[in-house]
Amino acid sequence: MNNRQILASVRNAPTLSHVVLRTADLAAAVNWYSNLLGARVVNKGPGTAVLTFDAEHHRIALMQVPPAEVAASRLAPGLEHIAFKIAGLGELLSRAEALAESGIIPSVCLNHIGTTSIYYHDPDNVMVELFVDNFTVELSIETMDSPEFQRNPVGVPFDPAALLERYRAGEPLVDLMRQPPLDEAALAQIMAMGAGMAEAAKAIETA
Image 1 (cartoon, one colour):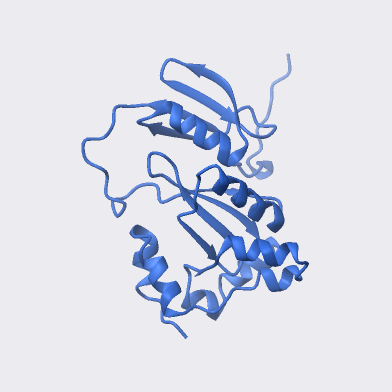
Image 2 (cartoon, rainbow, N blue to C red):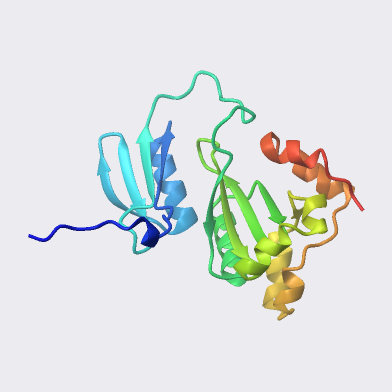
């Protein structure tokens, strides 16, 4: 038997594998994430369920807990949201359309310059983002340091149904993914989200 060496200089970057969520309604949560992500249950036990939607053995684990007597404040330290990347804009928008038809409605849809993002709340009020990259990773990182992003790090709301209609009409992707201007009505929509988004939105000035 040969000894093994572990070289710190050749360590790979870790990858995010899965999230584990506590839920007050296991059946509802399983159904919701199955619809949202096209996930399937790979294991179910007393008060637990494990789901995946790709080649990974599990991506979402759910644990049944008693309903909270008092809802936790979304301004308390803790999780703000989890996000899943979608392959392309057409898939993101058509998925949102199908989800809406099944009763899963977005809480807010935001163009962040670097991403086009649709946010939902699961049955336990956990915020979940589905998004598509508008640029390459390098350009997105560069964009985060731009004056435009610094002025408005939250994003600008958009209508996914209207954007899907423009997509199906053949409008160029560069136009569809360009951030629209922010007006007072759009800013009010962000403020209505509450928690971290509303706090960040307080510093935004409309053009």
